[in-house]
Image (cartoon, rainbow, N blue to C red; front, top):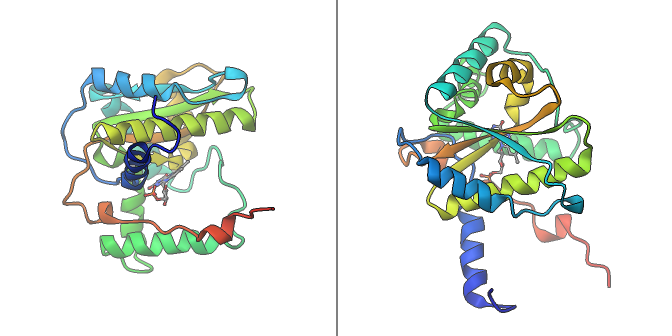
Length: 230
Ligand SMILES: Cc1cc2nc3c(=O)[nH]c(=O)nc-3n(C[C@H](O)[C@H](O)[C@H](O)COP(=O)(O)O)c2cc1C
């Protein structure tokens, strides 16, 4: 157990937090099953309301991953505007809209996709449904009966998972986009009726040659989100 104010622990932890970034291109290098299990087990130390641990994960690799990717890409091609579920409503107001636009602009510029190039944007969105080429695809679900507190718990689990992966030299991308095709995924993966999709997570080894992997997303200054009442 590190002592409080342990500088080495702070340095290691801040390095880890800063090193994690959403990674949208992967090497075709498999991830050992033992490593996946170790990361998931550590992530399960995340806190949850009354220790309910509401998260469930479906990990896909190999043929299972290919099958689901094929099914969802086919659904996306047939119906690109489908939206089975919405997890991010009301982002049209400020400051959310500007932040969203700023991310999109930075990403598309790195990818060389010009404004109004809808075909290239469609192709890029489609990469979501291939887990950006990651060798491991994870679906995080929660019991449909549970509320926003349990979704919050599940988000904490996701962040622990992504940091644990980073500490093992792996990269990730959380992907809410998948929820638009939830019914296709639920059927292709075959999870129980009571589970609702929270997010996908791509997991694998980052491809250093992919330009969008160099993106360092912006953050608002402390004064924009924190009020210290004294
Ligand atoms: C719940 C959640 C869902 C997300 N969904 C997507 C997604 O569908 N596709 C994508 O490319 N990035 C997705 N992201 C990644 C965000 O765009 C990213 O976290 C944000 O721009 C900050 O960048 P960073 O993760 O590199 O720090 C998602 C992030 C979260 C937390």
